[in-house]
Amino acid sequence: MTLAEKILAAHCGRNQVSPGELINVRADMVLANDVTAPLAIKEFRRLGVSRVFDPQRVVLVPDHFVPNKDIPSAENAKILREFSREQGLVFFEVGEMGIEHVLLPEKGLVVPGDVVVGADSHTCTYGGLGAFATGMGSTDVACAMATGDIWMRVPPTIRFLYHGQRQKWVGGKDLILHTIGQIGVDGAIYSALEFDGEAITALPMDARFTMANMAVEAGAKAGLFPVDEKTLAFVKDRARRPYQAYETDPDAQYQEVRQFDVSTIEPQVAFPHSPANVKPISQVGRIDIDQAVIGSCTNGRIDDLRIAAQVIKGKRVAPWVRCIVLPGSPEVCLQAIQEGLMETFIRSGVAVSTPTCGPCLGGYMGILADGERCVATTNRNFVGRMGSPGSEVYLSNPAVAAASAILGRIAGPEEVM
Image (tube, rainbow, N blue to C red; front, side):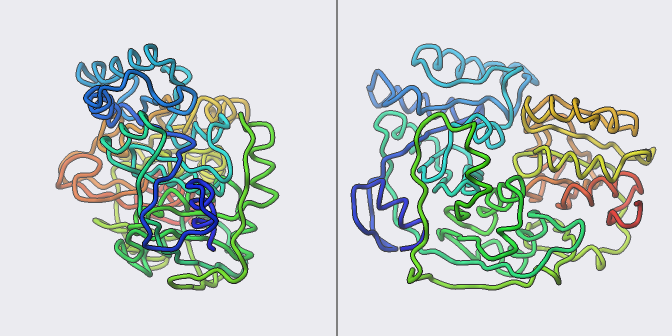
């Protein structure tokens, strides 16, 4: 079996599962946020169930519109807060709250071998830990909160093998953008993606989370990485409970196997209005920008901020550009302060935010006006994603976003270093 099939079989009490089978799976963790949890809570009430299946395995994280941007967002956060108190759930208030998909791995709430379901499409991020993690609708999550079980069809697995050595400034964001550019946003519909190869082994954990995060942008059900020494080192002092790591069988059957030579991959930029509309930085041409955003559940971790600070240190953001940095969690924020990254950003004219999803979904903290362009380390660039339907979002890695903020146009870091 593949890694995904191994995990699902173990969570439904079977020795083996095959793609296409319908199974009931035990969930290790269920989560929702301030956009999706209010509906899940409403549906939970309709079920007539008084208590969640396990309060330590249901996590609510208000992160999309907090600190509250307006009265409706405050009301939503209040719903989460009151339900969490009533049920004794794991809940993160502002000050301890971070972007859910950065926060949960940090806190050891998700571990290798888990099945995780969340009312957020980027729940697939936890595949970076070798977990089967997938986003579901709020009504499905309501049932998971009540029963601890989920119903699903076993997905086929597509294997991606990455060989060679990465060029400087090429990270996980570039590998996944290049991959999506090759297969399209519908290239992996309801499939599990399995990432492997020596270039994957060389990737740090933060870059693995980035790649797993964007598996859904190719239509995937989940994106998984093998558990190795880096994974085990990450969870060693974080894991709150025992876990079982799984390995792909040598004779596992895949729907498809694709191979990439990463040494040929440059920093990538996804043009509007699709994550698959990808070009290497050398072919971007001149595109002036109004805003640069560095953060999100895709690239809001400490490695991302280090890379951006390395590029921007000692320089100034272009006077007509707004550059916004959003750390993914309080831990990331504190570490960035201790390493002097925040001083670097502020002295360079960057606006630094408290942890929040904020502008990624067009929420707040960086909404685009009609005709404005933004280069962002986020995961989606659909029409109107970050504000006006007349605006444009270009996706990139943190080094490209930082260099672009300095020059006022989309640019590679080599141009400013």
